[in-house]
Length: 119
Image 1 (cartoon, rainbow, N blue to C red):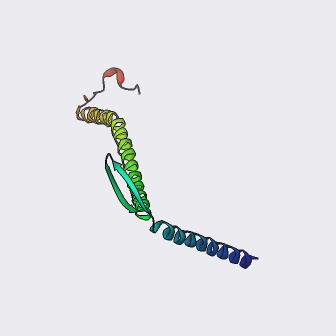
Image 2 (image 1 turned 135 degrees about the vertical axis):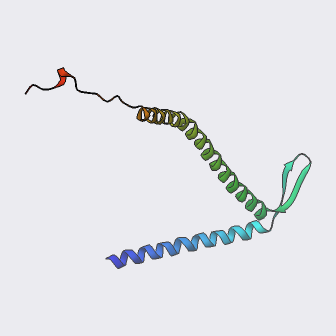
Image 3 (image 1 turned 30 degrees about the vertical axis):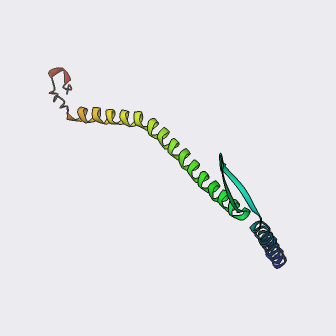
């Protein structure tokens, strides 16, 4: 039974990889030939193959995604730093108070007559 499922998984993966490979090959062949006019500014256009423009759009999407994630992470770091700053300040103040308290010398108490136990 185990080998049957392994064979089914293997051939399913092979079939999916083959279908995706054939689709990509057809996609590249169909989009390599036609030239398209790409408008990017008033009065400015580029004549390029559709495949080149698709590749450029894909790369631009990847770059924008990376920059967006970086922007969100930076904003989150700023928020964390702002929230941590008052906490760190309070911790420093408490540490200073503890250090000052440790430096204070306590008076030595001498036993008085009333403090001595009656024997």
